[in-house]
Image (cartoon, rainbow, N blue to C red; front, side, top):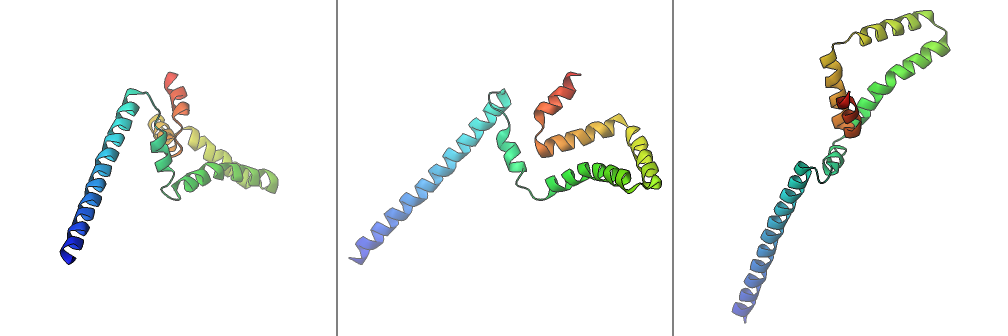
Length: 126
């Protein structure tokens, strides 16, 4: 009787193991097919964008960096402090004179974080 139970448990264990191996194989095949379709341009890279949004606080930090100049502009206007306005003008003067490679690097980083592929395509066409 114990021998029959041991044999049944072994068959069940083997069946579960085979199912897990089949699942891994099928998931690998599905990932390969998905990557091929993305490479051929049949589907967009939406899956990659979704996984990049799950990586933490980097999106919020980048958003804060983008919004910070707007906050400083509002503060300089509403505070009436002329020194703040002069410093802000100086900042944007230097910002406007950044090298082109640095601007494109920044656009690429923001595009990869937020998945702004259509926006980058617009810059590419110019």
